[in-house]
Image (cartoon, rainbow, N blue to C red; front, side):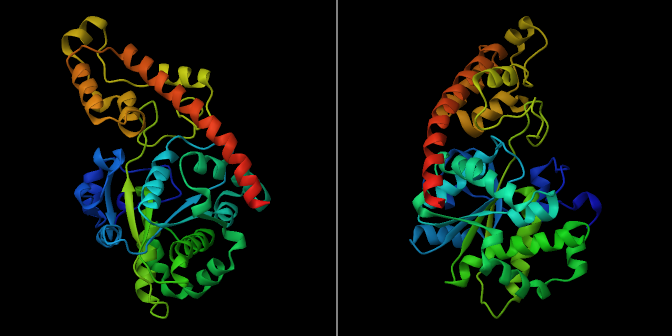
Length: 359
């Protein structure tokens, strides 16, 4: 595997062609018909691939035990709007019977991002966990835990540390820095530890940048015969692009949306978003726009328009010049403000519930 084919979960360099990703990394193409009551991310191809999806589909249909695990990286005091994609999938699996685990990667944050444990805990409890609950996770049905406080995870990381080689780390991650080795072992232990009490399938919703952890987890699970782990599954979603059209929503304040953004911030950011329209109003009406290259439509597809017929009609009208960029931006701003206003109320309620739950 050459350098261009290595996906690094700690890097901002991300692949551009999702079809090539499926082929190059041995992923399974996602089939929407395999899962009951698919959500909009599944229906619209935002969920595009995975590993071991069949066993999860079977578990849901046969109402057998399985778990969903996702994480929090408490390195910032804001939560990206793109995080909603992961939590939407966690909510989907929780509603379909999955035991739900959310890890706070405070040890990984300390090892790879230099965030001390106290700061990580404060951010998680005051911002990140309430955001996850406000996005729809059931607090009473979700097991939140900190890596630093979960001895089962720490012990498992040590026990499985001899199940991977240095060459394997270099092949998967591109290098083998000690902090990254420790971080990845903790990730694998997080992914597998729900099976310590009972063997069952598990599903991890991830962006493709986290697939190296899944490959390592599946490799280690297959070698750790002592535990008889069922290989963990993953489900991959496309990234929410930045408003300027970059592949992944960046951390830049100016071109990225954050949960809890103010009305003014939303208006300012949407007004600057890249569109698929023409250079002039006359050309737009005559030639129409391209919704496939339009960041407003990307928000519509992934988050803001639930009704498929409404989305299809809007795309057709845009292609035919019946809808202008200004009208799309105005509608997106309206929908985002409505979402954020509702979200803030849920967030404030969730903050109180989380404080009470963790006291």
